[in-house]
Length: 387
Image (cartoon, rainbow, N blue to C red; front, top):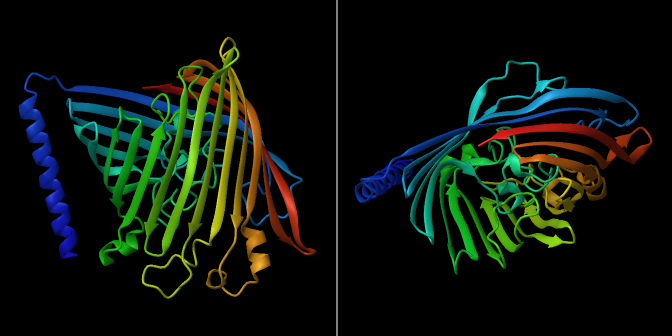
């Protein structure tokens, strides 16, 4: 604990020094402040079992209507080199499928950046953390209706094994670019699972990407502007937990519009020793995760039909199953998601509509044994964003 306090104190002194140096060098600079909002609201229908893994019937459909996201977003440029990003979110979905408790605002992003040069920016606070591109995207620039399910399935909430908050974690991150930002990197140390912090088992995350054409802005689609082709790879580890993978993103002009492809593969494991000091063996089984998104943006109509595919293929190890047979455990924990839809970007990322159908395919335990089932969901989502 003493070493942690020393590190935190040194970090505070470092950031304070960076701020004072930047301020002294830019006495004529006028700080700026900008605020915005994001709202995602939807109506739809889904079958019982789509988000209830204990259901064994897919016959019943129920209507849903909810405010899924309601965010207040701010950014402040203290100096040309110092930047603060702050974002809030609702604590629960408000609507027919929300939790029966009052919704209040919570802080999900509280990030401070100091840019030393193009090749080094130091960020600290509560920030987005992921070894792959999808986990580093923002909600208002997605191509499809929502985030994927399995690209970072263990860090979305305080109850998840890594105890993160919507993919955010507390820590320090270094990032930058070389070769005109064609080659970019991110590497950082984070708290990860809170119970392990006092035992000095930090979470380390790193990622490297190469941009062959335009620098990737991490949008789900470029809406017909520019040309992007990016290849990347990353790792994420804490204790016995490890995730690693590769991903690619392409958005290129084609005919009267542009084609967008986003693909990724990740290998994830919680280790195979439940008795280890920092084991995730009983929480994160070994698995292979695949993602593919494909869309075509029709610029003249501002329409984009799209398809999505996700696969979570669990290949558990002996000590991860708590005595359950491998075949049964892997079947019950593996999932496939197929879907598609069409988006109308009538005001770009500021205001748009997305109509989607998603089928979640999984094996469920029934009285007759393990059976494969499909559960459907239909959404019509409205996005309002000003930032």
